[in-house]
Length: 424
Ligand code: EPZ
Image 1 (tube, protein in one colour):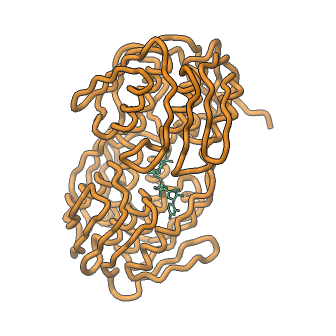
Image 2 (cartoon, helix red, strand yellow; image 1 turned 135 degrees about the vertical axis):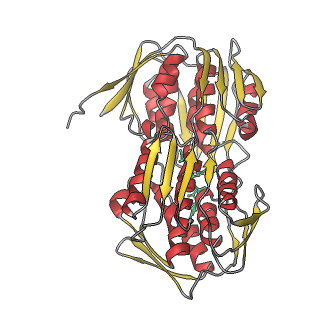
Image 3 (tube, helix red, strand yellow; image 1 turned 90 degrees about the horizontal axis):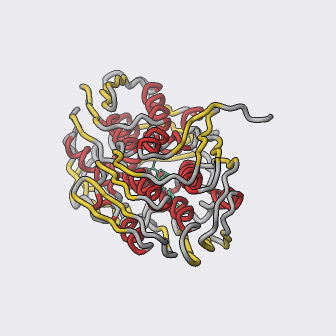
């Protein structure tokens, strides 16, 4: 098992490049299941554990994948089954993304229930409701979702989501593009990852309208064709790297980042006293001498992302004053707080609200990662803590950050990866 060993207290400087987006690469890879054959080429796919897990799942289904650096060439001509096994789905919840395309392509699908995760229940009721609305019978048998199209094809329908769901919107899109007739999706997620999925599906020949709005209209087509497509950059990785600059009192630039996808985060960084300079493809952050307390409420896009909530709490431990952080997306996404308090932070939790009393001097010690963004938060805290911080179980971190210790080292951080054994 690996850990990151961080010597805190060093200013950062220079520029670092964001990688391709994990949360759009996954639905793009799933959507290749809809291609009628030929090789689909996807560029700017990050080299991450979650991507490798999803690739294993697609290859289990019979998809042939080759890679060259961050480009995948995906051929679905020889798919042999529509069964997604527990062992793979359990490793990564986003495996549920194969449900819609398998049902659309084969008329049936058997996908293991993904199970829970570190920050509370992650229901999939909206995914199942979607498939039933589109004309499939759906049952849960022995821990598997068993879905079967009633007629020859899925049929267009009106899908009204009671809450905004990225995954359910993605599955609804991938199920409806080959359905018979028109589908409308109301209260659709408008995250850049969903916009990217719509653009990719249309590049394959789908007919999706009102892209980027919460009311999508899809006219089903007969088939989708192989194409070549470039993924977007990872806005959460970019925001995490900028926060590394802010927490260490540095000035850094993140290149290959689209500031238009981070307006809420950049606004909060400015509210905390940072100067943010942007152009179309890069973001420069200049830190203030003293960070100001800044409240945040995590909400669906375009508001402040829940995937930056943990990193923001780490930053606010160094801000002057008391900050309130509420997560309205995942009410239990606070496993990082006990570990931050072990570093010397003073944070209280009540329901889905954290209260951060700052500034508090952090002192390095061993801390345990519990999930992807919690591990990123602990790395940020280690960058500013006095002495050495060891962030354990960074397999969580490796799910969503490509070579982050190399990127931070290139900015001047003293951080190295070491393997270690955990006591039984
Ligand atoms: C995506 O997860 C992201 N994962 C998450 O990023 C991100 O936190 C989340 O969207 C919210 O932005 C990927 O894209 C792979 P949701 P997803 O469906 O699709 C509830 C990371 O750190 N809900 O938008 O699973 C759900 O409980 C990961 O990169 C239902 O009630 O999230 C939550 O409260 C973590 N029923 C809310 O909707 C459902 O059927 C939003 O979840 C589905 C979701």
